[in-house]
Image (cartoon, rainbow, N blue to C red; front, side, top):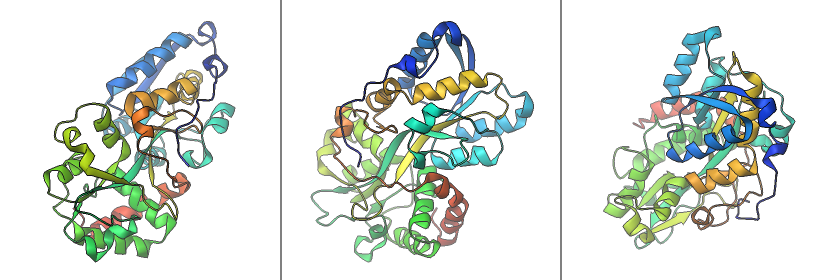
Length: 338
């Protein structure tokens, strides 16, 4: 159960070395594009004396760059969003297994790669949202989205979206490929419009009346509760929140995670950085700064994130889910999900 709770006090210096012992640099390849992450980097630099050199870009571009650079790559860390991209990086051979007692203890086993090549550090729940005035019985599960009663009501992103790819892969893992294909066919039949835009646009679709049900990650909605998001925040009270599958596997969780590069020139510093991301200090900031759920259990949530309510999260092993991402894409193609 994910819920707001008292933050477990963990001293940052117990997780990382002192600045005198940890001086040097760290080359970070990141596809996280959030200005709020600046605090994560500056706090790490202040605590350790390690200078972070950043290269930012889209995940696929960074993965391709690391592949092209090969053994000469300066990358120490790949930091990116979603299990599908972490799996892609592992399969491309650009990450390496590491040993860290801190990470093994702090990060739940289902949020780790089974070969210790990547770890999840923050989470976003994939939630069903609905128009309170028009939808008396919102879908209770992801599978319910395919029911004929919701024909013409649903806004959801394209099949090329990594969040949807991982969601479908989790349905394959939790149910079966056959059930997953039936689900995808049903959702396509129930779409209010062809897939377009990002998660915020799906929520805006409810406000505009284009659809009555939308699928989006939690932090887009939580962000609109915290600050003004055009076309959403002013009418956010009209939108209801349904955490799916609460009597079954629970709500699907997307990850933001990282791994140590296969040819990291500063491997020791890279591991220190991952351990820092697992500290209470960093975990609280993922929630307060970017409206996400911490990966570490017991860490306090930001008020607007906690306001979404307590819920049961799917604890399926994401390494197993990652194996089904190619099958998910195949299904999307077969059912004509654009």
